[in-house]
Length: 128
Image (cartoon, rainbow, N blue to C red; front, side, top):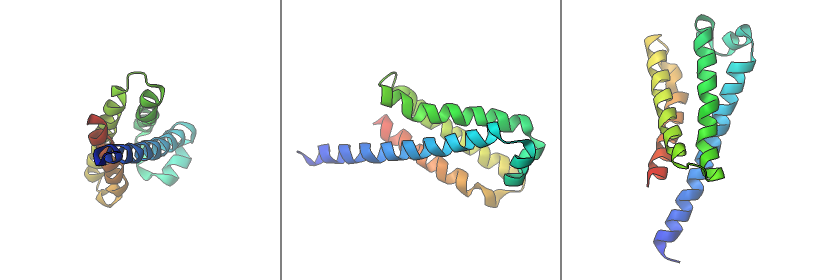
């Protein structure tokens, strides 16, 4: 086995780990946003009280992104959709950062930055 092959296999393993971790995180967020009451969400995330429609829309986007990160490659049906899902997550996290900064909640964007960075890693690795 050449060094290039072992690097490719190792990279693929790390990409799958990143994809599953990110998909599980997004699935959790979607479940929270789509199943919790407005009061429960406001207790967790204060911004949700003023933006109930945005909460539901982002919940649906989170669910679609989670599916897009793993299902296309897992099922080997249009695997390029995984790359597009990673780009979509990057755009979503950038939007979330801007949203929170505009509301004066800049210290709250750390999670969004980390999720965006993981999505960027997936996009970089799956583009290769």
